[in-house]
Length: 526
Image (cartoon, rainbow, N blue to C red):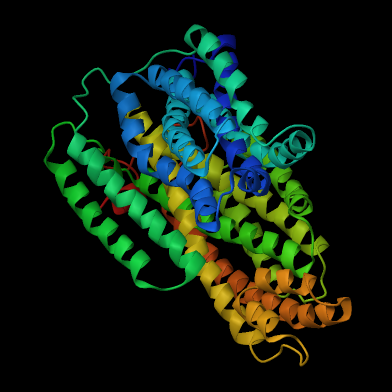
């Protein structure tokens, strides 16, 4: 027993955590291996550019759209039951994807994979909160769980590259089958069942409104980031927002809502979700700009560009494991705040890069960025699931992950678009004479277009084209990094000021003089 009366997790719970890590790692692997497989499967299946986009994007749309319904469904029917159902569906959909014979068949398989992935993710997090009642152990377990996402980014490119070298593209999807079989065999033995015994039926109109909110907004944001401003994505976002308002209103009238909006009365819950949103907004954009810089400005292959991110992923993995231990002695807000100081310092360094800086500064800087940002992800997620009642753990886990989905999409749409605007403005009048008009137009459109065009030009002319492109793209990085540093600084100050009274992990919260929660909790809950 702990000082607060919570039982300690034993060997069975830690083995269960290892079982939960496998499908989590697999869901993370899915995105990274598909990036490598896309050229191969597109050539084999004859997928056009529009079909390729849907093959890539539909998985994320389904995950984002079904996270809340699946999190709530797990609270009702049992998190273990939903996890096993999701695992079985993921394995079956992986087989379908591996042996797809047309782009439409593969897109359908990706739809099923997304729905199954949405069932797996909140279930694993909810089960962790059930298995690890002790605050210190739960924080460590969540840190290990979060590290699975970065491990997926580390293992994915290397494993995918090896498998594509020796097997066909479908073999990448087959990796999920034995993992899910292992989950189905061992899960009932080592994972406890937990559910909300008082939960009512799933409200199907709420499910429809949730899907109508999430998927159009995510689609609209991604389309704006990819193609710029035009009517369709704007209308899509507006429709999603309107349906979102209707969704919230309906939840307030139901006795058994799909999403309990009273969760947002918890101060730690709100602050943690906002922190996760802010960091994912910045982190996704930084990764996008780095890979573009590696591939376009430095002419690195996609595989080599992925390797350039590995030190950052490894640093994040270490930080996920270390920060919960530090937070046992130091208040979590201070651990997170200190990390965000490091994030801001890296972003300010990026804002001073020159076009000739090379890749070393970015690689090392991203490693520091990832190490310093990981405490917000690990400790923030712990606060999200640790603040709400146990019967709401599935919903809380779903919301923590959907904040990451929205943050990443929003970051690319806003900061990514800002960087592209700066690039186009600076490169427009600096392309040297003698460059063919088609290549010049491609360079003015995007850095990737410039890189593709330069490959078809004589070496000297291609180098002459890429020089102003590198300068302009670096200018875009300067602006994005400076704006991102300001956003993270504001978010960090907000978080530390409002959460500074939260005690170190495992210590009791000191009540206010009137016996209520600490003052900042009241402010955030207002």
